[in-house]
Length: 185
Image 1 (cartoon, rainbow, N blue to C red):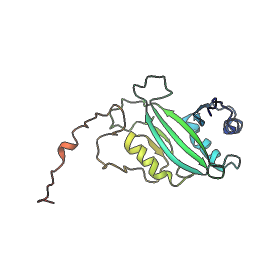
Image 2: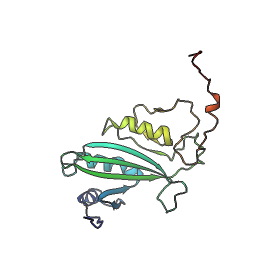
Image 3: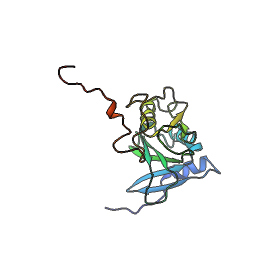
Image 4: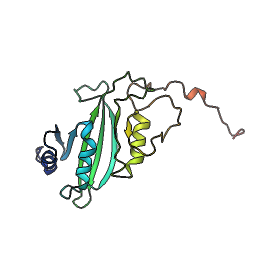
């Protein structure tokens, strides 16, 4: 049975009442609700959703990084982070999204000071690996992260391969590999 989307999820009202004067947006798609927050408000909203007894989103399932470069629809920023929260007691998901824009040309190597958000490792220790993956693949850094270094690629890797402006064939990193065959292994 299809339901019509409505923005009457109880968390929207709770967050709006808890943070008067802050700007929020909300969407609902296929029964899943997403709260869109400003990057500076992200940590405090996530903390509220975890610690408030009425919310009780005690499990961070995933952090997804998105690059909207050349996206056909208008977006709030080039990069987005989506936090997938779960309340285990109610078996309910809730998504929190924030968007950030680079302030420097994104050549994949420069650490852009605008591509920084607060870490949530103090709220969910398991976020450490998820934030490291987003950093490695997209170059978004997390302020306050206890060990922010690459997790999938080597430290000197020249860029962030999930950025849409990263060349599909790479920047020559495969050509520098030493070929190993059965006799030399």
